[in-house]
Image (tube, rainbow, N blue to C red; front, side, top):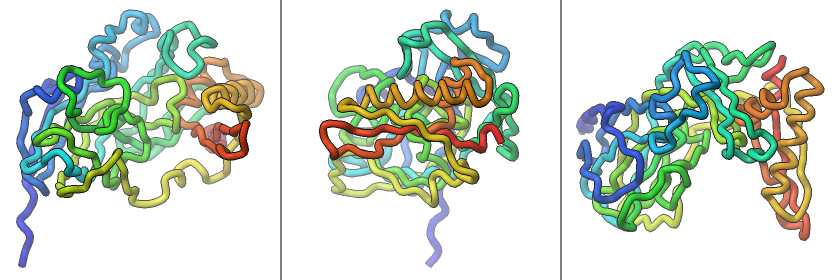
Length: 316
């Protein structure tokens, strides 16, 4: 017996909102197994463009940052269920930006001045994105913010991640990934945005390669799943695009994981400056878009180890 072909819908950048709110009216209702193509704007909400300069960073209106398109009402979804989101494809725009925004990021105290790098890349991702003299960053588009409406009434910020998803900034939620999100409200009310062309695990300066990227997703329902938090399944290896010739690794060791993360990133900034004669702020931005923070050890009390893995392929 042949399966019924899935229905395809579209949601565009003007159909957006700036806070999670379960009272929002859905812009679309879909049945399980239907597909939606989303066209979100970048994380600045269109305030930054391919022609922006660093002078635009202090003028950012944070009330317009990190919009998501939606919400999508998923027919049959009830609290206690899970929505399975299969990310079918991503279509990058060919440009993006990475910024140091004063007061934001892991090392905000060390980098108080604004900085901006505008990226231009091939939309088919055939070559890495160029960064200054010799730096080349492999690209892997994904959606930084993806989630459902929370059960608690009112408007909730899109900046922190939540039990129902949101601004998780997990670079492996990319093409082929199957993401399971716990439902807290009838219809689930799915939204997505904050698309990236590339990011390192940790997004240490607070921004990745923020880039307009359209994406297609299919929805299914898992009744009575009762997930405590989101989970996902990847279609294959998650680091092979970066590990061809190894990594430079710096560590931070001590009782506090946040202090360890700061030490590991600071150590890598110093190393990149010495090895490649780049500025501290350029090294910081690069770490945010392609280096990975990892907890290597968390049980040998009182000290833990956090390391930053920087892919050597960027400068080869």
